[in-house]
Every structure is written in structure tokens, then in C-alpha cells.
Amino acid sequence: MSTVDSSPIGVLLGGGVESTALVKRLLDEGRIVIPVRIDCGLVWDRAESHHARRFCAALATDRLRPLIEIKLGLRGLLGQHWALTGQGIPLAGAASADLEIPLRNLTLISLAVRKLADSVAGNGSPLELAIGTTADNCYRDGSRDYFDRCEAVLSLEAGRLVRIVTPFLHLHKSEIIREVDPATLALSFSCVSPRDTVHCGRCIKCGRRKQAFRDAGVSDPTLYNWP
Image 1 (cartoon, helix red, strand yellow):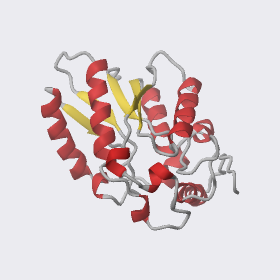
Image 2 (image 1 turned 30 degrees about the horizontal axis):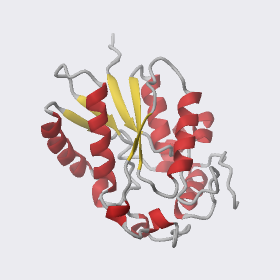
Image 3 (image 1 turned 60 degrees about the vertical axis):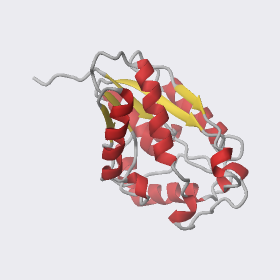
């Protein structure tokens, strides 16, 4: 008879198909989930926060801990980057390089692990952080080797074992869409140029979202400002 792992695990919750699917999967497996979202002052952060909160409210259970939100302004680091100014936002069909934000995963993971260390009793048990990175990630900070190195450094920093869990690393977004229930898909958010809290329908993230639903052969429940 298998034993259900009921230990706490953090999830880096960006609100997209991947991270919402990850929270749902871990809850279904009986885990205690601590969702963590990092607000870097980027043009989509307010809308992302709205959708992340809505998602957590919809999945409310004793095993889903309150959403932890951390604010960290990155203007000093990113300067006039489009993600801060909203000028020159890459549109659907743009190259992947246009979407890259320097130190993105390192920043998010480091802050999330720091908060988890405060939330999970330091009894020698590992700190686990799950992230929804998929096979679609082509950046240097999206490989298993990168996450392994992060684990080593963050374990030294935390004074206890840190595990970065990547269950979707060998899956594509379309494959995840096929596995997730429609209600969870409808609560997800992935847009870098939202109109209030609505997907713009034109940006690079919306373009990839639309394509992933087409590739999955699943009806897209997303409301787009521009169909």
C-alpha cells in the first residue's frame, strides 16, 4: 500500500497553464501546497496577481495554503526593458529571444525558496519548490542542469536540502493542456500585455497560448481582447 506524501511543497505560481496545472496535480496527490508569486513590477503583474488570487480562491482547501506574494521592483536592473515600460512588447510570432528577461528564473526561485524557509519548519526536512517549466523552454535557465546547480547553491544558503521539482520538464504546453480539467484551464493566465485583467490576444504569450490549445485539440476557454 503506497503512502501519500503530505509534506508541504511550494509552487512558483505565475498563473499560466503550467503552474496552475501543477498546483492542481499536487493537491490531487494529497500534498500541502504553498503557492508563491513574485511581483517584479512588470506590466502584467497586476493582472497576473488577480488571476492567481482567483485561481487559489477557486481551489480553496485546507491543503492549499494562502498565496504568498512578494514585491520586488526590478527597475534598477532592467532599466528601459519592455517588460517594465510596455513599449515594444513582442507580438505573436516573435522570436523566443525577444521574450527573455535577464536572471528571471534565478530571481524567482531564490525569493520563493527564502519565503518557503520561513513557512516550513526547519526540522531538517528538505525544502521543495515545484516549478512548471516545460520542454518549450529554450533559455539557459530552463534546463535540469541549471536547476540542479540552483539546488546546490540554495541548499548552502538555506542550511538545509533544497529541491527544485520539475515534473513537466519533458512535456510541452499542449500535452499539459490535454491532461488538465477545463475549469483549471479557464482560470489560467498568460499574457504580457493584458487589457486590465483580460488577455490581449496579440502578444507573444497569447500567440503561444492559442497555438498550444490548437495543437492540443482542446477548446480554448480564454477571453481575449483581440480574438
